[in-house]
Image (cartoon, rainbow, N blue to C red; front, side, top):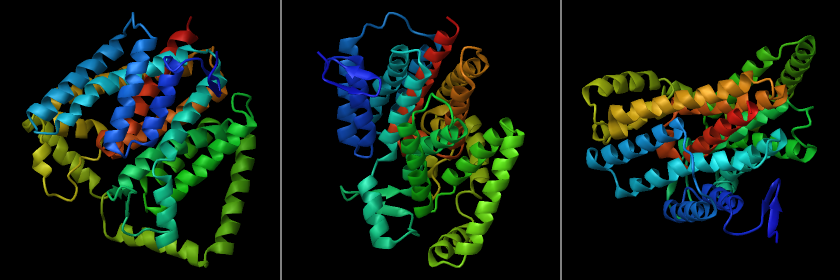
Length: 394
């Protein structure tokens, strides 16, 4: 008996992999509520373990598991972080296996794209109500780059921006694969709408990372797919942008956005300081092999603003090395999918956009600490790509 169907996922029982994935998505949506989302991730894990029997594990998953042990041990034992970090030991390896199992349900690329859309939407609508209320109260631009969540806690612009980057990457990928069958008309509308909203949220909070990710992926895919038709498309786009600028450049909204970004740039915060943070972190990597979590206590930029260096900051060089190795193995899975002759060009384009959005985001933000939901989604996608890689060569 089928309870309900979500895209290609037929949920026949609450004790099924499909239902565990639904609960995982809901947990993502609630991930800024730490305690509630932890309960939901735990429920999702229990359902998954009840519904499946894991008979095989990969080297990549074992490396990930070792990373989790190292991260929990050093972050709690050596750096005095909360025992709440114990959840990473269960949720992170689970996210990878869930990605593997969901990808194994179908070899159809259209189904893999649907899974990516569901993941992106589960992150996109985090704090949607708070964003709407904040926009009504303060206008197009929130110069403070902080707003109050519905549970009276403050949400930083960095955390919000991180959760929108997958929608940006997926949206740009779909733009370049727009005429292909692997994305339905309804999904195209949803994805482009999600891209528009994600860019608006980044502008509202004066986030530069999301805009940079958008332009870099767009430029990469444009050059990669450069043809005569692309040149015509680019020319038309440039003309439209120029005409739009001439038409609206003096409007209050556009002026407010430009002035706010220029004002933030004049202060030289974050973006200009990342080089110094990375340099300092690389030095700590050698001198503080167990981590240097408390070295930044009280500092404005206590993060290293790089996922791998922030892993090292919280749990030392061993965790850093293990996660770097895992990232490389996942990158190899991705490259094998890209060169596979059994994968269509359009799906490869979408994967390029999604993968680049992940790598670019992780290089400039403390992803694991900013949003556990986004980090688990990354691990899910790595598991998914690993399985797609295996299936494409069978």
